[in-house]
Length: 352
View: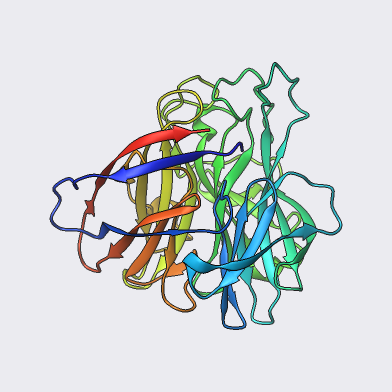
């Protein structure tokens, strides 16, 4: 997961009059750290805390998202896992902070030149000091397919990663929405797994993937049926795929909202657009609507962040900041009872 930044510039919206969500230009807001992944947020002691990751999570705090301070590294105390990106968190009623991370393994494939082909996995952590230190609880989602070391996408030879985690409204199950980069084309895309809330303290072997209409596929090396399947697989030089889902519950709509990136169609994952989908029931993977393009172009790691006190990347009201990586230049306005998407086009200037 090399650093992926895109500078985006809004132009005139396309004409769609009945909107379920609208993109509105706003004064810029920037996270304090470099965000090469989803950036989970929680509240504690009246403050908002955010983790930005670029191979090592950094934690900042503050009421104002644009003026957060006190950045410090988050440490894995019992683990040699590195690099790691903290992509999702959940703060329990007793203050315990649970988290889930993306880790990339590079030992599967021989190195050729300066390009490293990694295989991501997803692990779980827990913190008893509000995210200053974490205890590694082990891997919970891995790809059981043979790595494709000759993959041409520019980054990955397979694996599971680039994800978000959200608890259902009944507080029964955590749902993992993740990107699958390996296996047959029919196994690649955006997939879902779940774990019982009761298993959060000991998650090893307790996460199960959605596969073939059920939830019995093992999280470790089990098969998966994607929600959104790739059109052109990741091992090609020009993949056509959705990836990097971020899911939140929207109070205005009474639905869950997924933002997801669309890579098409060249190496190094050029961003064709940011897409959006809706679903009222997390337990029904088939309930997600056909993704609609929200933004043409844009940047990696789109994420909606609620602006009201207590809101996070996991819950928002009628208005939310739209982040792409570390930066937010727009807000999303959600409207209950409406249909359709008001879409923006964006010009892109990629920098490395």
